[in-house]
Length: 219
Image 1 (tube, rainbow, N blue to C red):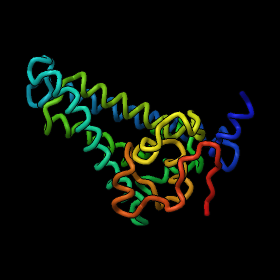
Image 2 (tube, rainbow, N blue to C red; image 1 turned 45 degrees about the vertical axis):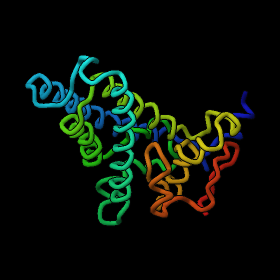
Image 3 (cartoon, one colour; image 1 turned 180 degrees about the vertical axis):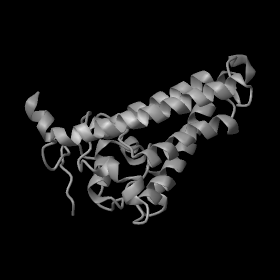
Image 4 (spheres, rainbow, N blue to C red; image 1 turned 90 degrees about the vertical axis):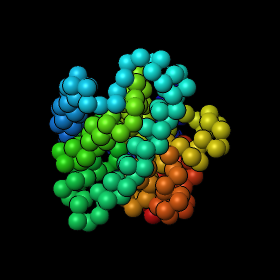
């Protein structure tokens, strides 16, 4: 097991405990704010001012799937543009530096946000419950997808062999290699789930190939 795992590593240098500790500290801070967002959403639902609902019969089963996909697409667009803005020299140091402080991503980096970034990230779900009718199941599923996907893309190694997914999946969905390139090059790969916006707006690395057994170069 050891040798294949090493070959799939995407880190350029060993991860140190200091970096992990810093990421954990920021993650705890982010978790506190996200918890406040959840409390606000529940309070707003109890007050009857959100579009959240609990009866599947309200919109039907087909809408559960449609609204789930819609939330992911909208969130991906939201994330792409705010993430790209975070990397502007005017904003990077006070909005996004903490997330890149460790250099190489690890699972602990997934939600290692400076407080201003955590606020902007959390506001998406606070806002979406006022804009689109969502079943609580859909909201929870979207939150779970975001969490699992964030950890997956920050693993620092490829979890699956290159043959595991069809070629189209690697082209349109963001994996560990795709996001590791962002952590090393900064000016490419700003998406969350999909590569669509990177391709459309020219921020896809021209040398990108989703090959799990290849380490990432800074050049």
